[in-house]
View 1 (tube, rainbow, N blue to C red):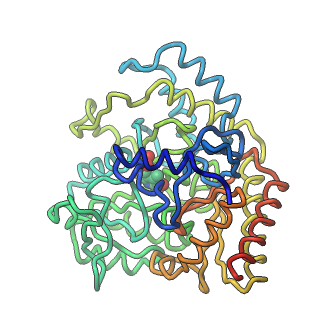
View 2: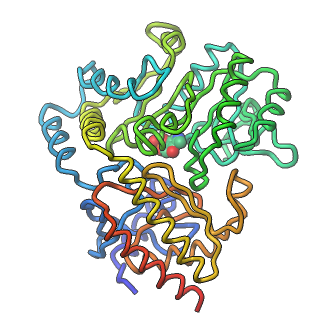
View 3: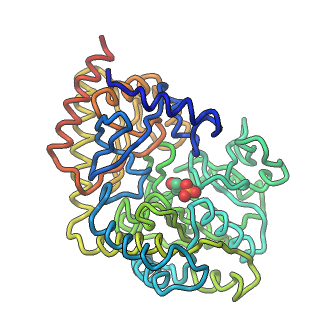
Length: 430
Ligand SMILES: *Cc1c(COP(=O)(O)O)cnc(C)c1O
């Protein structure tokens, strides 16, 4: 057993002044038990906790760090930006430069605005979609996460899942009633929602869902969704906050030829700093204030340090040949290895990969939607997580999250992880 006394003490101290001891709930390790590790520093694919234990990190700040921790190129660009001032609240050239790196990678997106978080990006995209279509209702999918704004913290109600119910106290029914919840990878459920509403402004989807575990949408499903939106003048919002520049250089467009009316980005495009963006067709985007009437703003939006981190990250991505192919090979090597080891221990494991993103479910059957995902053995996952952590492997602390490969990893690292997995499954079976 590793010594994590300092983490335990720090967690207790944090709990005195921070609700649950954390500034974002998943960090509390609730679903796997135990104490969250307090992190001292990172280095490449590794993180070190404040007791100086070392871990192979598959969380990578929940996605942003495609080049791992403390990448020298990113570090030096951020340092030189720092020396020019932290924030001005006035335009800087780097904002345009960053957006010009993103736009050519995404068909159909002509203009973009920078914000500070994925939550802001999706919230603003929805306001814009409602203004553009002059309708009020939105459709989202059960198991997709788009940040924590009121309209999007809605889950499928019981019974025939059309009109959603708030998934958090504090959200008025008057708001959640405008959000309908459809089933992922099920186009008929979308049609049902559209019929129930008759007033749908937009559909928002993670085209590669990463927040119920990794569940990519089927190609046919996405294309049907696009068709439905065109036919009924509904704005299609592709939320690529996680998958953008993670699954591939072109997000979902690396896999399926689909255009968005609006798209949202975050995580990788900020290179580890708080930065996100929403963009879309010019005629929609030009409705934003001051060009148009739709209000949206931010004191720190387009922050110079964040744009420096984002810009160098995107340039480095484009200058690294075979980046996604190499990361995807490592991801396959990992999940295929996990699957055959699990199989040897008589444990059923479902896996998937999209570029540098990977997921695995302790589940007998293939996972296509959130109902399938929820049938996974979360107890077994919790045991596995604890055993792996004990051996120095840091996976996301929930069955319903995605794992991330970063460039400093190589086959040798994955081989070590697979040895740990073999020992962990053996320990669990004992
Ligand atoms: C992380 C995430 C968000 C929210 O982004 P924050 O920066 O945490 O607000 C929104 N959508 C998706 C798909 C995400 O993965």
